[in-house]
Amino acid sequence: MEFFFNELSVHSQFKNLGDFRSSTEEILRCHSLVNKSGYKLYCSGNLYSIMVYGDVTFQKAVNDIADKNFTRSVLSWIHKTGPFWENESYKDKDDTFRLINNSSNTDITAASLSEAAIRAFYGSRCYSLSYEPSDYTKTPLSVLIQNRNTTKEIHNFWKFAELGIFLKESDKNKVSSWDTLIEWAKRNCTYLHFADYVIDKLTPEPYSQQLAARVQVLLEILNELNMCECDKTGSAELQQRKQDIKNNYFSKKKALFTDESDTNKRNHKKDLTFEHPEDKSKELFCPFHGKIKMDRQFRIHFNWPKKTSGEKLYIVYIGPKITKD
Image (tube, rainbow, N blue to C red; front, side, top):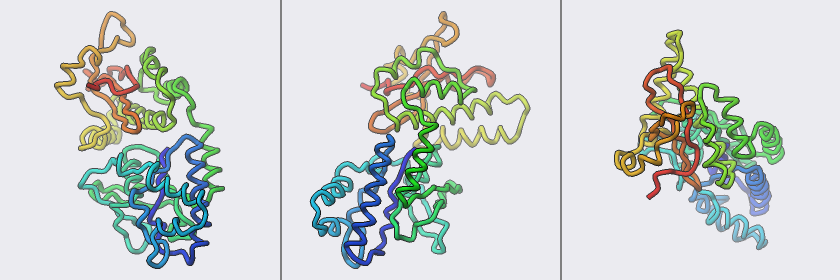
C-alpha cells in the first residue's frame, strides 16, 4: 500500500493559526501511524508554498507557531524526510489528470493525487490523506487519466481513527517477512511457478514492507497474464485482458516489465542464467524482468516470452537489481 498526502486539501480554508495547528497535528498523527505500519506517506515537494489562510504560506504558518517541537517535526517532514513522490514518479510527460467528482472537473496533473492515480493504474494499492476541514472530506476521489482514458478511485482518509481501523484490518493480510511473502505468492499466484531457490537472494536483504507490497503487485499482474495465456476456452474477454496487460505494463515508456538491453544480456549473461526449477540438467536465460524502484532497486526475473502458451511461467529471481555495473 502507498499513501499520498493530498495538498489540494490545503486551500486557504483556515480561519487562524490555531485551527491550522489543530488540523496539522491530526495529519502528523496519521503520518506517524502510516510509518509505524510499515508504509510511506508521500507528499509534494512544493507543500511549503501552499497558502494556508490569507497570504500566509504553509511554511510561514508552521514557523509562526510558538512550539519548537511541532515546528521541527513539520519542517523536517516537508523539507527533508518526505518522501517526495516527484523523486519517484511513475508519470509520463504526456499524462494528464483531472479530478472528476467535483463540479469544476479540476486539472490535477501536478498534484499528488495524480501520482496516486498513475500508480493505481500500474497496480499499486494507493490511498490519500486529506485535511479536515477542507473540500476533500469525502471518499473515494475519482481521478481521470485523460490520455489513457481510464478512471481510478482513490480511497481518501481525513480522520486518524478511521485510518487506524483500516490499517489494523489490513494487517491481517499483510506479509511480515520474505518467507511469508513467498508463502503468500505460492498460495495466491497459482499460475506462476516459483523456483525453490528464489528465497536465497531475498534472505540476506533487510525486509521492507514497501518492497514486499510492490513485489505482490507485480506478481499479481504476471499471474493474471499467465492465466490468460493458459486459457484453452478461447474466451474473447480473457484474450482482450491479456492484450490490455501487455499494452499497459509491457509497452509504455515506463513499463513495469522490460527486457534487458543487449549490452546487459552480453555482459551479465551468466548472472541472468538460472537453473531450471524442475530440471536441474537445464538452464533458463531470463533477462526479462519486473522493475521496482524505491529506496532500493529490486527485480523479478522470469522466462518471457514463453515458447508456447502452455509453457509454465517460472519466477526464478526476486531481489536486488542484477545488472549493476
